[in-house]
Image (cartoon, rainbow, N blue to C red; front, side):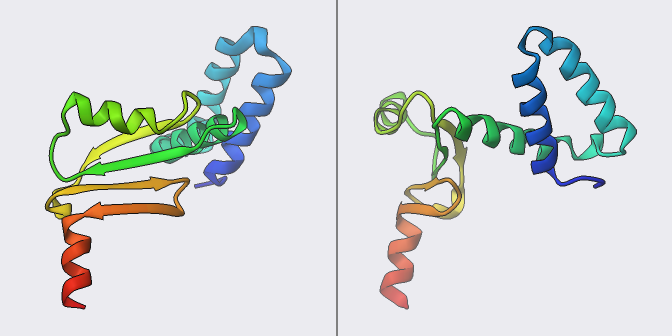
Length: 124
């Protein structure tokens, strides 16, 4: 990768802030830049970094919620009630949890209420 994803994200955010009226043109040029630099194949990493940059700039947090099984609508609603509208929430299924859920905020704070964690505590 020619540039780190964070560099791309900051450059895009700055360009959009300076010229908000021409967002479509800026985004087209941004995709061409990724293509010319050979980083279009790494677009998922770049998009994740852009998502994080814009979420944190608006005062939100990056939240990952791992469920052991497909959650009910009521369960998702309970989790959503604990977060703000500015937060970016990514729901995932992780069968390794056996049961329960794990919430990670900004990649560093974690609430692990899974059965696998409880088993590890018992046997370690």
